[in-house]
Length: 139
Image 1 (cartoon, helix red, strand yellow):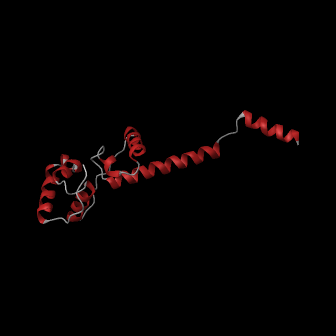
Image 2 (cartoon, helix red, strand yellow):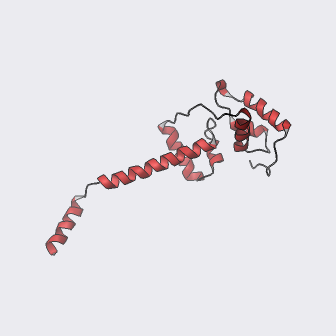
Image 3 (cartoon, helix red, strand yellow):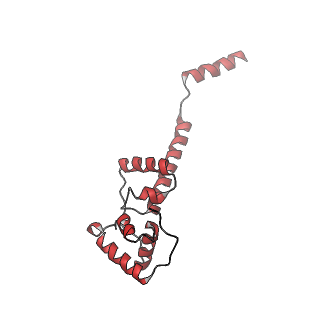
């Protein structure tokens, strides 16, 4: 669902946001931002999150524990949607789009580091050794 062009937050919007956050917070942990945003269609999920955290002057302190399955799902979604963080975030309503972006970047960095380490530690194959020997002997 596309939101309308940016509109300032009215006092009524702010009151609705605060009430929705209270209503859609599971076990007093992380608000369900997808459901909250549906009730305020003129705002994006990110806009709702940013406004709420600015109002309460704190950032979420709940640390997301990512399972291997979550990481695989996240990377598949990133491959499909690329950097469309709000779309990916709909599959992980317990975290913000900023947290998702940071997790993807960490996973990509880890993949790159692992590839570089593999290249450095990779032993030459028998074929490569035989080709090198052949070159030396043909010299």
